[in-house]
Image (cartoon, rainbow, N blue to C red; front, side):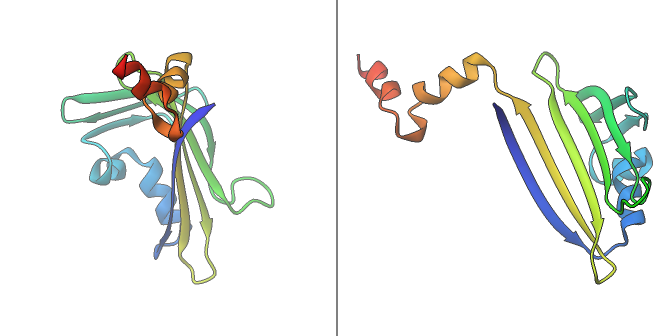
Length: 137
């Protein structure tokens, strides 16, 4: 099981410009992080600093738009983690829109461990009465 967040945006820029914005460390430093190291090859380093916080990890997949025969969608997939936290998988997918713009899909998924799964019913989430019952006991 995973805990997943996803968002889809329609951007007025062409796919090549959006690809640059999500893969070029200098451009990433304009909107995502104060400092970025991103080695764009499978197994390459991914490192981001925002203020005092850092996230580090590795690149899983790099597929520029139009990079594969017959493919027009581009994908960048990397894993990152902050400190001892479990790593999460970040996927950025871009595709051209008919109006010349770009669809950008961003998702981040973190595998849930057993403690996360136990914490869901204990917290009372999902209509469970176990959490409140334990607190009252």
